[in-house]
Length: 396
Image 1 (cartoon, rainbow, N blue to C red):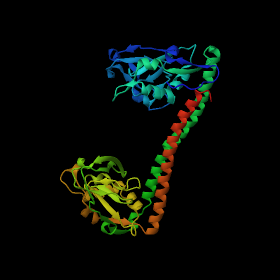
Image 2: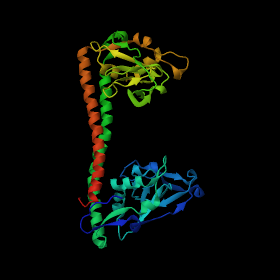
Image 3: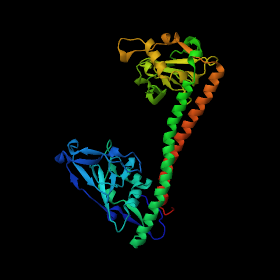
Image 4: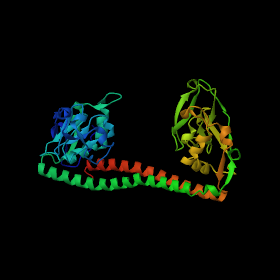
């Protein structure tokens, strides 16, 4: 484990000298009618600092051997240590044997302090680097117990524990503020979606002129000849009803189509198959230049009549999906296709251009809010780890 310069009086101590493993096991199925507070690894999210709530289930529902834990322990998830799952239980219970149950030596280390040490970026990196298994990596026990933990004034237990409690109190306070900020950033995107739905609802479609799609969009033919020895940045549908796409790079030899369609910014796109589930989208700048198969329909948008954002809003509504389902063809309900010639005959309620521009401004503002919230969420995660790192450098 990477070491750094500790404050005067602090020293490195092996984890094995600060805690031992409590491997008290139980088979709940032997107590079929008894209720147990059971925690699996999914009881806590990656990097979460909040203790899971009680999860009472009868012993008859637990068929595997479990470990016991209590309020004297710290739980560490040995499976996929990069997920950084550590719990300081305030209640008794049982859990999966993927938990390592640590009993901190009370005269040497505060269990909350130890839990925070196990959550630091340096420990997560160390545990990840000392894991075995490709698909289901687990930290190696011998490496785990040989990890170095920074301890303040270990030769003066009273001072050491007092310093540890002070660090824990400081981290609790700071991380509580971070948690509240995260709660707001997690709540706000839902409010953005509500705003987006309000924008849609505000479109008084019954008052607009009905315009055939043939006047608004024009289908584009495949324009890229596939060569086996060339690499292509391929886009496919990721999420129905949200206009989202995934992308990956493929060699031409992997395609079964001789020609593909290259995307341009502001193209209107959908897959023929299951378009009625809402798989419509407008091509953003980051998707421009990628290619899609001829199973997608790609339209040039006549922006003198309709703005791409207006199409995006209109084709995201469930009522529109129902209309698309009605004009899709095919005997198999799950394999119906929406062909471009059928969509071109469809009459779309088109707001005046002045209304379209107001709608564009609202959509752009909502998208920017969501982008900033996503950025803030990422920055808060970084801040959490920075606070932990500072605490164990003696900087808090």
